[in-house]
Image (cartoon, rainbow, N blue to C red):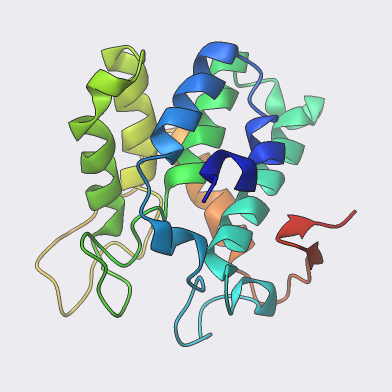
Length: 192
């Protein structure tokens, strides 16, 4: 499977070659199951476009497209630097990368934001990211669940978004999970 090809369009949203190259490296770390599972096993928390085979990829692509369009809007996006925008897009691309854990389980793993952030940290030597860039990206990933940071079946308490970057990533993930969205996809690419 060519993981970079699946996200070819979205990798093109990332302006800096430094960040795009690192996004490609990090994308290769994601387990193959990420590319075929639905965003929700029950369909309870996601719109129809993110269900079925490849649904998680479509959910992530929707979150990235929402971010890309908002960040490109000069009335809103001006508060972020170009590098910050690139790192936000990387965080969104990877945020659900190990949603069913390592190794893959049957259902969503509650602490998947921490698991994927730890996976990225474990492989930091494969990247050219600075320590501050790596922390910036992984902290956005770890807090992407927002207010849904506890689970009665887990002792883990996920961090809540604290700054504008973490809140932005959470917002884009949240919006892409709204059942009232009707984003059209063809071959797992958004149709305009």
